[in-house]
Length: 330
Ligand SMILES: [Mn+2]
Image 1 (cartoon, rainbow, N blue to C red):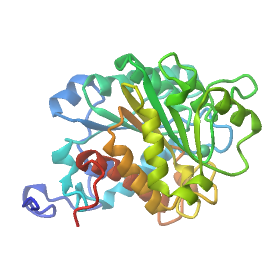
Image 2: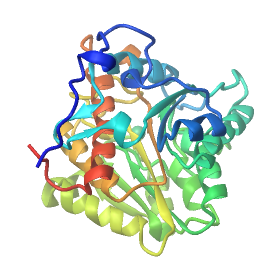
Image 3: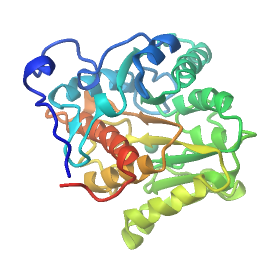
């Protein structure tokens, strides 16, 4: 039986839509400081990572956190399909953005590591909003320091991102999976990439995946087997004898018709419904950390469909965490 809940648009919780500071769905905007997060009781924290200095293609994902927050102003913390209020369930907070360092990718990685570490030290789940797809390289350093056992790595993307290097550079947005698989605390058999397709996956990347035993789930497999079966397989891989797993969502895993606002929009991808079900299933297995990357508001549709879908991806991960991925209540 459903819980009786207070109205969201009345009384002490009244909040006019489009008013106030643009934090994520109006969540309390607090300092990214371990003690502050802990004293708020937050178990989930949004953290912007406005870093796009490592892209091999188009810049602009540094505006992703702002785009996501702006699009979220229309949404409320109560998710009817899950019968949860994100502020009550998780004491969700918005910790603002990591102060990345212009022109210095190495110092930026260090400060990303530091800020994500502050969230983890508070016992909260960091949901990082990029930024380009190099940011999980730094985030995985912070996660690994707090969870020293074996970790799984789950990568949703049109692209393998297993480039060994790009003209000698190893920390690009094309190398997140290769750097993860090379970690001492990550076995290739615990790495899965989901949604692979298209003409931006060179042979050396497939070779790297084979050499490291990485599970590659292509869009053709998803078409043949369905999203649920493939995502459950991928989750089994990343949780097999590991302490936990990290999940990274390249927005280009979604078909370009629903996700134009990304660095490299690709046709033939996941529908919005498929990615939201995938998010629910991933949430049900409780990741240790998560990011959404390559969200690029400048290329979005004027109705901000990309930024809005990215909000829903977060909602569905959090809904799946609360309900175990069971079918919706209503
Ligand atoms: Mn990609």
